[in-house]
Length: 92
Image (tube, rainbow, N blue to C red):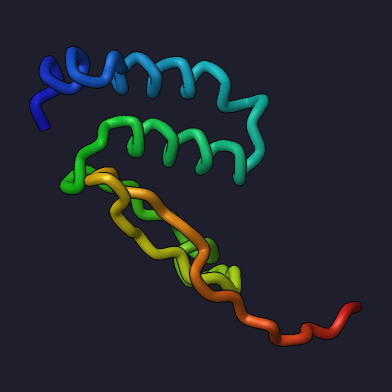
């Protein structure tokens, strides 16, 4: 990762964000901490820089029951929900 380029292209400073996160650790719960780290890494827009969640988060999958597909209109990309799953789920 070329940090100066990332700072210029995306107007972010991930090192400073990590420092600030470190200063706020005592006030954060575990989920909030991981959410903050994910936000910092996602802001880099870099496919080669990843944050891997620890267990048990890493082994969990969310199923939303929808399929989102890309389509083009007038040369512009758009996204739409094209299919839904109509499975009835039991309530607890």
